[in-house]
Length: 215
Image (tube, rainbow, N blue to C red; front, side):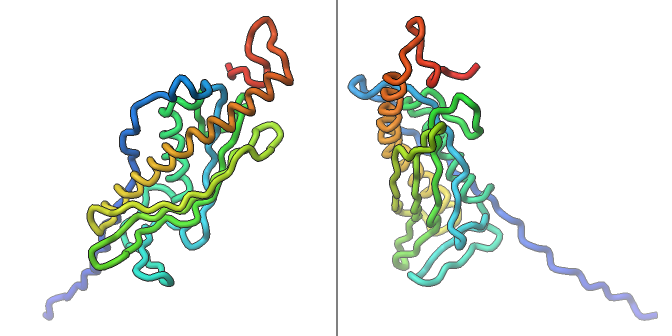
């Protein structure tokens, strides 16, 4: 009797997941000459340009062609990845009373934006970089007035051409965004605080109701 022959399907490769971890910041609170933290900040999920709205990590060897690493993915979508990193960086910066990812009635301002590019760029055969292009906008949570906006277009060299190298360099780029943007956001919020304090006199020496922290 002929021996039975069983065909074994090839096993799919394991999917590798990557996160970002902001490098240590300057380790300094804002100088005494800077406005004191006066407001709370909400960081919304960033929108993502269509070509980059994918958990698979993207690399580019030319100006015109995007490619994806198969089985190498961000642990969450790029919009959430960037928003979580910004929240973590701002929360420890000392520039804000508090920083949240979920809205509540005591939030003073909302940071939103769009990830326009998040990719590895192969510059030459031996030089590679993480590229982040990010547009940010700060809004008054009550009036929705735009208080500040800026677009960042940053690159940082990869220590090695690999998804792991891309995650490390992206972490560094996001650290740079936090360090540069936090003082600018705080300055915009200090103007908001001053305007609100002038519009609503404090009651019994306390902070005006518009800026009172939540329970």
